Amino acid sequence: MHLLFLDESGQLAERKFFALGGVALRDSDWHGLRDLWQTTLAEHNWPVEKEVKWHGIRKGEVPPALADAIVAALAHAPLRCYVTLLDIELGLVEAPEFFASDEETYATGLMFLAERFQMLLEAEDDVGMIVVDSRFREDDARLRRFFADLTHDGSPYSKLDRIVEGLFLGPSHYSIGLQCADLVCAITAAAERGGGQARGYLKTLLPRFATHPATGELEGVGIKRFPERARRPRGKTRLF
Picture (spheres, rainbow, N blue to C red):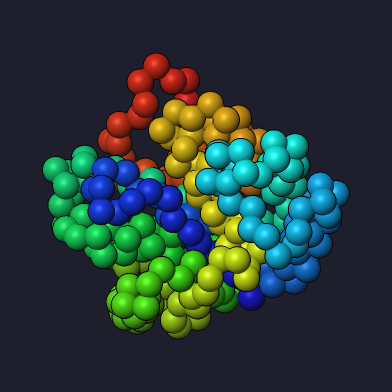
């Protein structure tokens, strides 16, 4: 079985920019990821029970040496990264049906990620489940209903018959997988906005992002922008 851990970056209520993404790995690789994570924390005297999240790195609450080490560890971890970047302002003009509400916007990001997870599972001839950082009880209930319909009916572009029914939701401070998802998603989103530190970290992580099996293309696979004509920060050289 494969596991896909997802987290988000950005405020849906601002209706500007939102990212959803994370990491996928085989269940048999879980112990390797956990040991790598915990060993890296121990080498920097960071308590295992204390979260390492992007906002803590950005604000300096996480020591820079630990932040560098954690990103380097993820770059060598047995996982694949996926992030969907949603330009809500542009989407409301070009594809309003996908951005009609906060719930529809979140569902759009989740749909794209589920499709890419399905492609991974097909290539590996496996099944998988998705673990999402819990939001609020009412939001979680709506998300579960949406995902139940999505896995039953499929998306407009793909059957999702290899994904185990239902979402598994839980608080991130109990999950190394969700902390990894937070870092990958938030770093990618911050790099998209032009953040220098995030762009450096994303460059380190790029080898772990999924690519097209035939062309090796990253765009549209490991990193999905929607709408595809999404604006980029001015004056910045693209990493990919």
